[in-house]
Length: 242
Image (cartoon, rainbow, N blue to C red; front, side, top):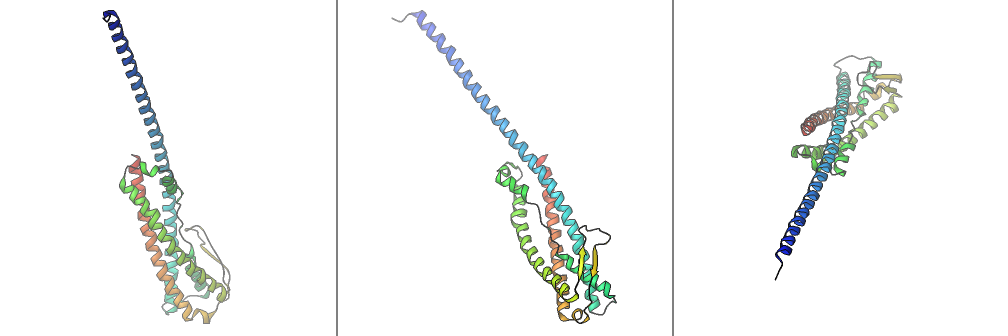
């Protein structure tokens, strides 16, 4: 027959150790939850810091786009002046003609976006922590679609304007320098040239100016679209941080 005192003692031990076991398990679970929360906070801070870096890069790209829009519009004005001169709608000196022919060739300068922070978001899987689906969609659309398409078009523009500038050097012995700042007081410096009247009046120059005008106008439209896309992306990034 079981001793009542032994049964009572066994029961107390069972309750005691069961309670201690539960406390230990709860302690482990709480520790795991706290550690998980700590890791989540670390990842969230990493994500937020990366997005802040992205906002800074977007601001730089926006400034760069604005500068290139200014430059392209400057080249477009020169293109229109040359076009009108070839159609005998205005009078220009040889110095002015050469200046504006060089200005048209200045449209060669192209916008190159900074993609490093976006790649960092993707490669580190931090992009999965972004709450806004629209932000994620716009990020991939801009960096994986719009900018890739823009890069293809940029290479096409550059190829044309490289050839155009070579023809100016070949036929006018043109020696020119372009300022890097869009608002420079002396954006184009002509250090030497020999005017070639027959080439200037040729169908080749006329065709170059027509193609230049079309290319510049198309590029300005693309830059304006990218400008608006970057502005929207910046706004979504700011909302993600709030």
